[in-house]
Amino acid sequence: MIQYHAQLARMTTFQLGGVAERLVQPSSIRELAETIALGRRRGWPTRILGHGSNLLLRDRVLPGLTIRLDRRGFGTLRAQGYEVTAGAGVSLSRLIGFCVGRGFHGLEGLVGIPAAVGGALRNNAGGRDVTIAERLSSVTLLNRDGDVVTLPRGELSFGYRSSSFAESVILEAVFRLERGVREEALQRCRDHFQRKRADQPLAERSAGCIFRNPPGDFAGRLVETAGLKGLRIGRAEISPLHGNFIVAHRGARSDDVLRLIDHVRERVANVHGVWLELEIEVW
Ligand SMILES: Cc1cc2nc3c(=O)[nH]c(=O)nc-3n(C[C@H](O)[C@H](O)[C@H](O)COP(=O)(O)OP(=O)(O)OC[C@H]3O[C@@H](n4cnc5c(N)ncnc54)[C@H](O)[C@@H]3O)c2cc1C
Image (cartoon, rainbow, N blue to C red):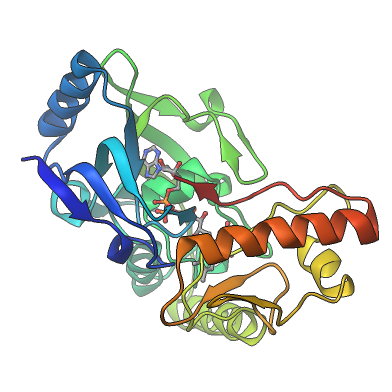
């Protein structure tokens, strides 16, 4: 079912931006495939939305078709041996909880990342010592031709916050984990979360790291040493806790964030001679 002029802000962690011209939340692979085919026939630009934790939506009508994969249609979560199958709409926190509850080790380093499995694979989300691709066994996709195919890890490529999924929709994935002690996995989750909470503003509205780390350096360090932490434009602020996070305060608009991004890039280029590339996507 197509919803017209659907509010999208609440479907992103920044909680900013306008409405989708058309929004579909398919409840099956078939509905997803039919929706994509319809969009192609009509020439609608089409985007896949996960948990919206790496996105900034502009203050406007987002043209074309937005397809959101959520737990209703893409919420599979099951274990067979030490392999766990998770649908694209399952949150990472649910997947990690499921694994830890069974004493399966391997994904604890991703704790605190507010992504869905599909978005996490698309961006190869990672924590301090693990990326999601490292635990991947296979992925089932809807490819450009509308076919459902399952590809083993060896046929996929991943890089720093990137993957080879640009043209496909991730439907579900199988992760290979290790048998371990439940309490140890739980403790590792607690440790990771405490460290993350200590240096990232997890309770505020953001989209995680705004800029990609340039080779051999950290965007947050460059922003901080350019004296920009705590800087505000409108109701958007460079987090005083972490230089690579912009947080949106009550009343913020996307435009405040965009102006802050421009300002940071220019200042960092002047001070450090580095042009920061965006890690978030702006729709
Ligand atoms: C507080 C906070 C902390 C964060 N910490 C981290 C961190 O430690 N490490 C890290 O890597 N990231 C982190 N992030 C960023 C973000 O969580 C990741 O980039 C995540 O991978 C985005 O997943 P998502 O489901 O929200 O995807 P979305 O933001 O909805 O989409 C991101 C991209 O994936 C595509 N996509 C989504 N679903 C699918 C699908 N099923 N098939 C194909 N393409 C799809 C979208 O089209 C878009 O291009 C953080 C974000 C926040 C807000």
